[in-house]
Length: 311
Image (tube, rainbow, N blue to C red; front, side):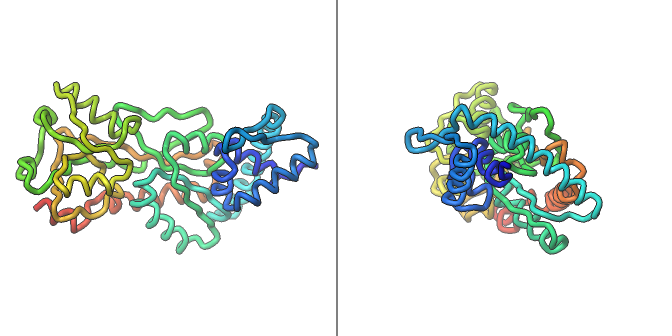
């Protein structure tokens, strides 16, 4: 008989793309995942993983096993959901994925609240980009994901995935304190021509929104510095090297040399919680979504330091 935990390890490698990433998602060491798959290969007398450069890839023989693993894990999930629903309280392990600023600005408070009120619930967080975590929810690799979309990139869900709106995250301009915009209450998009920008790299929604929006307004943005992390963008603005557009969630207090200015109309990204339709009745899912919504007003509110910076 095939061992479910070994099938789970193979399924995780298929979803996450590597032994290391699968181990991180499962809470194991890479060595433990490799051992599970090695045992599964001996049981099935089949090679399931093969070297691919510095990584691994599934063999053709592994794919039917992955499909079977996904079906079995879905059956287990339905059974666990039924048991949890009968008990009526959130319990068991709940794997949660969130993009970086939500993982920093929203989830710590939510997870701490859940831990106090529901000690039988073992919620575990991983930081994952939204475009990856949606597929991970659909495939059963994680239970719940916090994602976002913008007006230029509406959220597209695969079949079998449900969503609930958490809230809207406002994006504002950050400018050096000596910049002419720092004296204004709001700036129109038409007035943004000729500015030097710091921005996330191409392929990120913030970058695409900035380029598309300024072009519609008749300006070609001059992006002089690029960085993945919002704290780096803020530091570049504080050094007087440009202006940037950053969502408020997870941004943290602004340094003294940076001023927040509203953009009119204000760009907004919307946050969602996603889960599989088969788990919709699970109390842990319902309670986590409720707690995300409950904590949202405080998470999206600027800190006292930020409010002081713009006065």
